[in-house]
Length: 249
Image 1: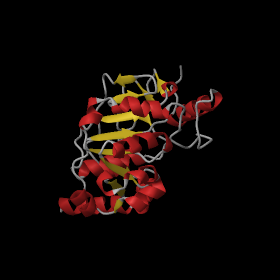
Image 2: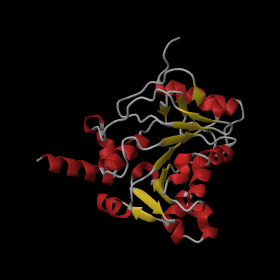
Image 3: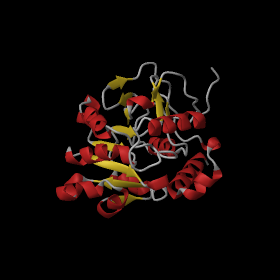
Image 4: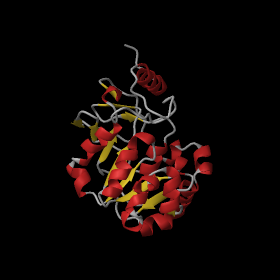
């Protein structure tokens, strides 16, 4: 069988989710981290993990299928770190101790996070206000049993990992979990680039799968592979690059 490209695999999964009625609003799922039937069950399965129970600070992507994870983080008393859309304004810190419980559901939306959270738009704010992040939860379009994942194709999850790794806010082996529908798990090799970040655990509405033979993770920011437009679009990334260049001189 000919090896499929990342984009061909994404389209295959998006089309399959539509055809089988698994994709949920917002529709169509194409071009997104797809929302899926049973996302709330996957979140409940995630909450059973030892890594979740002991984590005090969790980073969760802002996409629709992970809204139940973000809500659970606040309800379980965890500090929640959310990246802003396209990381353009950095990250947002949501502390459940500073948000009335009746507003948790609002706070875990993108608009609500800007209202109730603290925007961390500079490296200094990140380093001074974020304790070490204990767990990362990612959305995926597809994932395989070796922990290789495909996001929606814009590379922001990988950049978020690199920024936090460079600042020492995550360890290289920080546990990374993805919540997906079972149909998004593939049993063949997924194309991977040097900046791609594999996951440790795959959680679905029906199962918890611990990855075996997970590949290595990048050491940090791979500056030689950064598209110039990303640097222009993300001020905190440009700041990090300036800092790295200054440290070299």
